[in-house]
Length: 470
RNA sequence: GCUCCCUUCGUCUAGCGGUCCAGGACGCGGCCCUCUCAAGGCUGAAACACGAGUUCGAUUCUCGUAGGGAGCGCCA
Image (cartoon, rainbow, N blue to C red):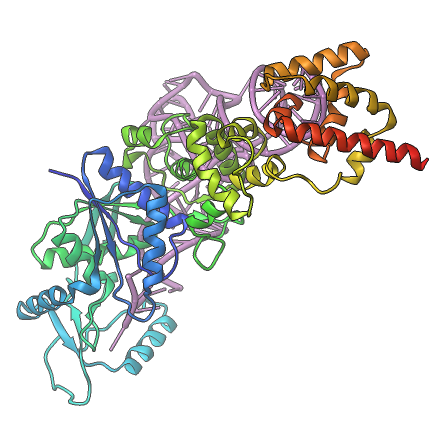
């Protein structure tokens, strides 16, 4: 049997990390078994669904690279089908019209809560009675009155609930529109979904959905309920609480590879392995290895993975993503070092691409003035000699490579009989205006000959002015 | 309130009755390296929620307790 999974978000906001991880697990379950992955948009809530949200979800999935084989299928396009199945259930007396006004239901709920029992519909309209004229009925599913629903959850094992806990849920509203628990079943059945992988907030819905499958004469799929993701404070992550959209991670400078790797390790493991490419995940993933416990989102570990991928992915791939951030920060990279070279030297000193772009601005734009503290500390009169020596030696250097540049610095330091630091720090300030940059040879290299010489000259002027002012 | 689910270092996790005075990773501390910042290497502190069973032996099995989460909608 071909494995078929689906991701079925409702378009009421962006794709957040919790949803993204659920999608990833469903996607992996399909890919790991040469199955099919279906994307379905559950937009039956006309009030809250928006086209922008649909687009945001599509964008998020595309950025992560979680491609689907079928869909996106919109539930709003399937209303005829749902109506047909509702009618079928009605005809077979597996569903019935309910005329109970909302007010009565309210009261019932309150009373039941007060009596310490689980609130549920009391079945007043189960048996046909007088049909009130002024009320548009809803359709309720006739849930089995007794027995247990038992299913073997792929991640949690056996779960059992008594039918007496379940009530006759509404499957069609008074305006005829179908409701969630019903449409999922019809869709998963029609789309021949074999493995339903979703958040564990759906565990309680599963038994009633299983009953609907049975009423429809269909075999229920296998269910795998993955745990929630918690915020750093341990509270559930949701659109309203701390969850940011996956596209926000793009904007913040994270690589999709890093986010995917981080997400997959939240709740899933393969021994002690921490780093997984998407290919490896596909090869090693098994829904049975997913944890039962909710896990807290830990930004530091994401940072670590992000840096890891910036360091280890081909520099050209990283550079392609980095370009977006330069543009985003208004940095023109036409004149200056190749972006791959920037990646190569900066990857080990920043956590995100956003930082990388910000810290690399100096390689593309001349700084305005020296950082006061750095200049005060390093652009002292004593530095003039080494800066002048560097200027002289650099002017005649044709091979502007890190190795050659390194030799020049060594030579100057040796001749002046000073340590590397005495030469490097003033030079660093001269080149970048600050006391912090990549190793000095790499900084020179990225800066390029012309701007390096300009910077040194500027620093020498600064020192002269300083001496004159004394 | 009722029902279902969950419980190993701060965090993510390994563990599937003896191999565990519990292993890895992030983070944190120390040392080394060092031209700044990093990166890297070595190293340290840090956990089986609690209580009963079962067993020769429980982190691992069972049951309670406590704590946490979810659901109980004409939302999905």
